[in-house]
Image (cartoon, rainbow, N blue to C red):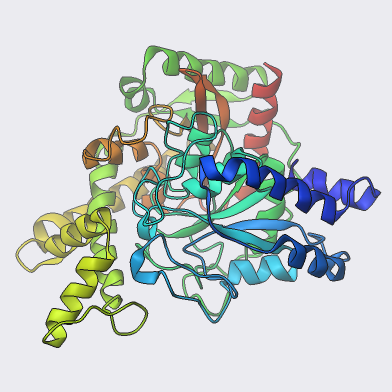
Length: 466
């Protein structure tokens, strides 16, 4: 069941909200002990009762899952961390408030890597989430709970957050659609900060049409967020069936090919062939600065995380550990509260920002970011969209890379360039590799979501009919 199909069925009287909720909670009862996509869930009877008053609104009371680093009144917001295990926000994030205004209800909060730091949803204080396609494999991260919930049919759609690929990468590994909008198109008000210049609220859905429909609901300027765009919000569904004819797709073969297995590379070539059959022009492009994107991203994101997470000191938001002095108490609170991956990134960020190392690491990373952004701008004068795989591999077994952070970070090698440039990107299911889902990624110029969604919808239809 998709969001658009559910709305049509509700309008036609074929389906009732209570029946839909019963079906979802029945699936949750069977699958959740295995998948563990959720941290907390709403009471389905309360949703049914409230849904009757929302029947006249665009989303008709439909339940939407929300990643647990996005503030929602009435639910804990733990960020997958012991530090926030008892925190309940007094306000809704803007994206959640807009969903509620449109008639949606919050179904529950989904699991994530602690403070969104990870690529596997293994770094959560609540334990790992598992991939519904193979319970011995990771679902990706950090929005792994949201992706797994949609893939398992436990949720119609979910909000996630994308910093370096945290919506697109789990979407690819779980076989669903993952949309990262242009930085600033969706307000960050109420999204708990990891790396503020990268963090973007995104969507995980079963179809591109669902992503287009929900993006129109949550997008738009917000006075609470000074980084939000002032651009208007078009009807992203209006041109969804425009097809690929005449669209120029850039493919960075020299960057992509060396990182793929023979099976993955063959599947990638099949995507290009399908695009050409649908009237697109594929153009090979060279992007030499992309090799700097991954290390630059991790240096900058860790630096911003070091600053943002300094607020968790055992005084304001978090449980406090006892110590003989204020410093001892602060140190004990953070030592006990943060998990291993969060500590690793805070330590790296603090090192990068230290006086002796800022010129060698932080400033060089900023120059690399500018170079990647500049190269993206130049390539979009020649092509309309970039086409790449979303990840270099399908989902890997739980625990396989947990002790090797460099190998784990490599999962984001194709997603971080768009994050560095603040550009919109989407992952759509593109077949299987080693019998597990594998994703196609499209990247568009600034605020070109209409073109991005149109092309993704065309590829989605092309892959399903091939």
